[in-house]
Image (cartoon, rainbow, N blue to C red; front, side, top):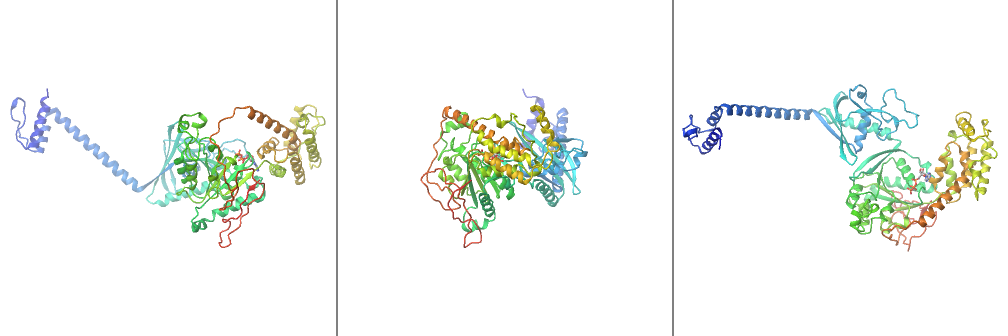
Length: 625
Ligand SMILES: Nc1ncnc2c1ncn2[C@@H]1O[C@H](COP(=O)(O)OP(=O)(O)OP(=O)(O)O)[C@@H](O)[C@H]1O
């Protein structure tokens, strides 16, 4: 049953549509006045008691809302013409610039709601404004506190007499992923103010990072994100033969300056280096040092990364800015797991196989090769690949044009051991130990076997170290070890004797004499020196024991490896004709990859007909360390 009021409206609507004068009235009577047009229809509606009131309210509300919307639109339009709004994504570098810049603004010291953070945005400790009164310099492990805009709060501050509103946001994406963003509104009609802001933030940040190298890694969504920065490592701190170091630096510098040379010849402006050899021999260190020397950033690609496929890899490589280092660490790792020449071994395995396989990437070798060659790839890219298994690499991957220069890193030579020692102990930072206590059960005495021969060498140097000292030795001839340690520690901070350059040379030589040629890695030698950070003579005295220990550890590791069940390796590496090392262009095929001939370092010879040096090659050889 339709209520009378509604029936009346329906009839009126019909009449209006049909242009009829007939209208409905309860009981069949004609309604006065006749509803022949819209105004009369409305008048009729409004004349209907409660319904009329309701409709009036509806129309009034509609008008108010429309007015509000119009006002908001006008306000926003007006605001947009006076305000410039900038958005920054948390995983991009400009966000870092702005956060550091913001952290240095005095505004936060007066704000009512602030975020107190110990994040330093990849900068050294004093890179961000410290909470007034806080001193962190020189304090080990101290993390500075900085004051920043609070999340989800809009802050106002002034920049060059312009009002700025800053809103920081944080979004939780699940699985521990957080997305940070920043919005800055500047009350200005001119872009100049915004440019000045960006430039100031960038310059401030770059000044802070001048002594650092920024590192980017791919996130789980295969986008680059800023993973922080590291102090620049000096080339001098990496002990490899000087000519190899020079080759790397000169070749890289030359490459960076040769854009037009490549362009004129239609050669893609990219260059690849393959650093291969034993773990802990300085492959990563030299890349880090090179990035610092050239003042460029490092983008690290892990080919075994979960979820990485051919398309992602290609996109990742293509989105790297020019004049950057791309570092593919342990390039063999991908090859011995899921990467094959044409396709993933078994898509089922990649999806649901054992964790070691499903947890890795599904890239194919062709995908990798395409990504390296990438037609749209950024030009001016220095590609570095490292591997411990040179023979596991496909010849197509290591051919010139992809990985042009191959450098082998070997176990430490005596020369490297001595040089590492000298660099490890800057003369001003170290002191000498007291003379060894007779019959003391120190580490050297505790080791047996061929240690005696080595310790003979060491003892020469410990006696040298304890003799020619400029400062009188504190009296440490005590009976209990505990007391001696205590007194030795005290001597470190009191009248400890300093090393002379001559003593350092002698100690370094003594250390080198204790280290067998090409048996231990540089990393392990460094580990030993770390145990005696400020006591070079102790490092020498205990070196023989260290060597014995290392041999034992390796023997144990070998036994474990021999008895352990052999894990299936997928697939067999392709071994074929390979240029053992080529400096651009030419390849000397060899029938198999065997241990490479030792040191014969490539040299860079500038082309005779072109001013651009070094890119024409010439030498097909192997650079070994
Ligand atoms: N030639 C070297 N000169 C100075 N330090 C070295 C050298 N080789 C290794 N080290 C030290 O050993 C540590 C490991 O070095 P690095 O990571 O560069 O080795 P790697 O060859 O890249 O090893 P992996 O193949 O395992 O990645 C670093 O702390 C580094 O300082």
